[in-house]
Image 1 (spheres, rainbow over the protein chains, first blue to last red):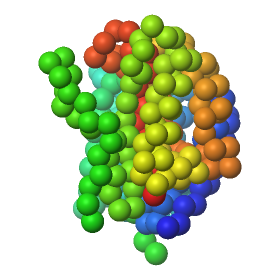
Image 2 (image 1 turned 90 degrees about the vertical axis):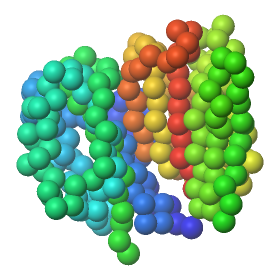
Image 3 (image 1 turned 45 degrees about the vertical axis):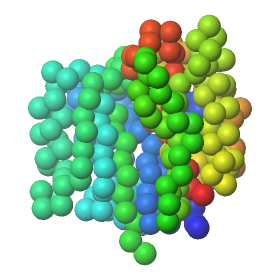
Image 4 (image 1 turned 30 degrees about the vertical axis):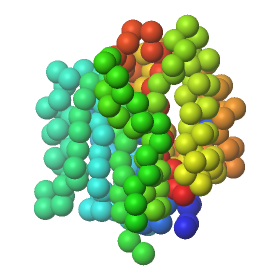
Length: 121
Length: 119
């Protein structure tokens, strides 16, 4: 059994790892934007860029993403998020996804995304 | 390979479920507090006590927790929950985590958490 952790942080108080790899499975923490002044499209773009960076750090990429959980502060903005999502995702290899509304840690935080992915050896 | 189950519950007002389950390389556990007279600190500790028991039963431990999904009824409890969290986790092996606000089935439930761990 192998477990590798990276991006250990206590930025918002809790001690967590941004990524944990168990054998060939990667778990990423729920990622939020650092710039909370943007609209949901801008925040989604930043979150997906951050996730791309973490996938690279783990030795994988967006084509190997298995599951995605999206929380939107306002479900009325669903299509705004989806437009950015469709730009990001490979239409030939889309992951499984859920999207529900949820209040996030800060009222200006409009989207949080948590993914799991395969890390090919 | 067999499936192990921990904490099977049921009854007239409860769904028939198991709180924890394990396969060959991983275990998962999801629960709420049972003593709802307690505040966020007490309820969070109760949940972690159940996880400790399930980790032990599955031959895992705190250093192998991979991911935690936290649902808080009140985001104003975030900082207090984090203090209990930082006390519980293995500081050398912190899991990945997501935390969002949600309403639980009973209005007195303040927190629900799911963990996934290697074993």
